[in-house]
Length: 346
Length: 263
Image 1 (spheres, rainbow over the protein chains, first blue to last red):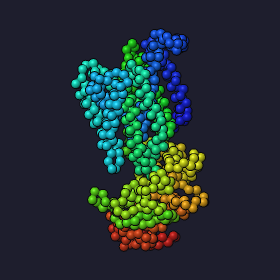
Image 2: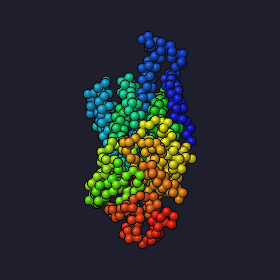
Image 3: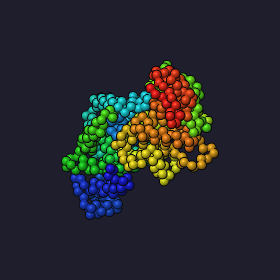
Image 4: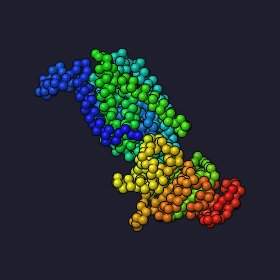
């Protein structure tokens, strides 16, 4: 019924992830053989990086780590959203975090860009803008969907669509008032690209990934109880409102940082927890750690594909994940409809 | 050590949903709440379980107002089975029942034993490894009942400590989607729990089923207590006509002597 035990999946991911990291590091426009790799590593450590050394350690390695950390953040946020809304189709981008964050970041790029485009300060301002934008969007969606009777999932998804449209309009507005150069930067960034990743961006996403990894597993029992229903969870002693607040705050925070550094890499948060659930079941105590690892693995693979598919050019990573994700989403919808063919659920 | 409503009233948007509700359930007692549709039975359970704050009066649980209890502590001694659970994630039956152990930290081994016994008690042992989402409505209801049992489980014969609070079970139409055999089984189970010292409050629709197991009965009509007392006092043709607008004959059951309502 379930193909894998949680422990088996965990081990599998712990083996596959380093493997994927190595393969990704070596492949690209310039393929580097393991032998060359070790020679280059020696050169680089002794402080004389050659061409290969620069490619490996200044271009590919930070990008690779950024992809892995971003995968951790997005998959973790997705698992949390799906648990919180008791809906396997929930995803941070569906409830407006991503588009809100992108509008917030766009605002900062356009209006603050003249002063702070480079360095740590500029980076952190964009991150603050993305965080604020994502947070405001989620808050609006959450408020719209919550009444005294609780949070309605369908209203939430509709509110998410409305807020996404609104932030999209804001983004176009920012684009309209800006010069061509900034416009291209914004639009590239919205496609979700890990291109030109530096260690600073890695540092930011590392903070988000660390917060996700440290905080999210603590809520797994409560999220499990919440799957039974809100009042059921309350009867089991879970402080449901506090749980919602914390998880939404966490999601807005980490996804905001993710979007600020890499744009909108869509569908990772939707697909990864879903795959994990198919493999080992919905228990958050296993689902969350496995999703974090699987998210890293998935985004490393997707980003490697983005780099090598149309050599010598590169695709934005978000395009790859969306091209895998959208058909997957449709197949999920069809499956759900089939499952509820008796009219048990709307 | 009781569960009691003291002069409870509830108004929402100017509409009175409950008024003047007064009753006490001790450990070992079974209170059955009956009434026509829309009488306020489920609302009463919501107030009783602390989910809703009453506009007037108070709900007292083991000596304190129910909403002043720390949530986790209350959850260890009060299990609530709502109507129509909506779990839509593919947990196994065993995992669902295990969720009932959330407020406890009694350890994996003891929890597993309790889950096994709770499933046995609802005749659900054979469902253990099945996926909850693949079960029928009645099976799901039984699994949810087992989950609530696991939440407040106390081993039969185990000497509770002196200050061990009385544990309560609140059930909203627990037999609604059961076949005849499982209705019987559930009522027997409830009776057995009461004899172990649990207090039980349940909403039922079937007057005879209530008469069979309840130690007290509350007839609710338009949010007020129409009748409250021992089953044979409450179940009379006059009260049944007053509350349900149905003419009925009430006779002692030939075997048990409980009132038997014939409509």
